[in-house]
Amino acid sequence: MTINIKEYSIAATEVNKILRYTSDVDVNKIPVGLRIFLKEIADPEYVPDINPAISLQTQHISQKAKDILAMIYCYYWCTEEELDHIDNELKAEVQNTSQELFGNVNTDLLFEEAKQRQKNSLEQAGMANALAERKAPWYKRLFGFVKK
Image 1 (tube, rainbow, N blue to C red):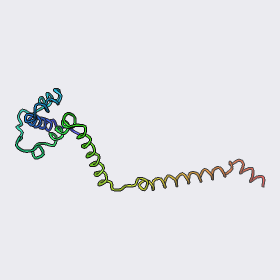
Image 2 (cartoon, rainbow, N blue to C red):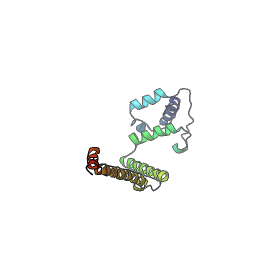
Image 3 (cartoon, rainbow, N blue to C red):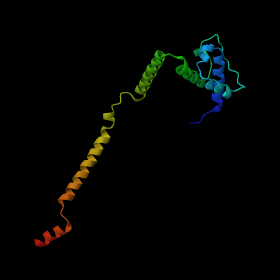
Image 4 (tube, rainbow, N blue to C red):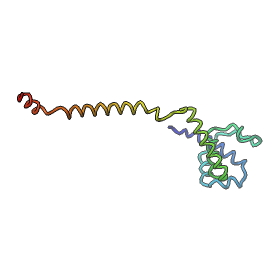
């Protein structure tokens, strides 16, 4: 996975612009080090198109900026109840996605054929061992042949 510095630079610029329209109380909840980092990596040439009159969901910002804002929200702004709600939604989404991808996969049925092959090979190895145990050593067989 390669990291595109330019994408993060643009995202930081967009986040900084959004934070300018955010209340000082909320901005001050974000650690100073993170705010400084976002300002340092921001692209000075990029001018984001942020409209404070429309909601954040309808802003035309990059996915990386949305990810950064989601991280800021989860770590610094939301309450425990909101965090629990987000956690439950994410768990449900992961479960639904895995259900869509894999369906109702029964792992016992999925690996039954492999288990059967392993059992068969063990049984065959056991029969070979049993035959080897029944067969007398060559010198006993020779002595038995000469004795007849």
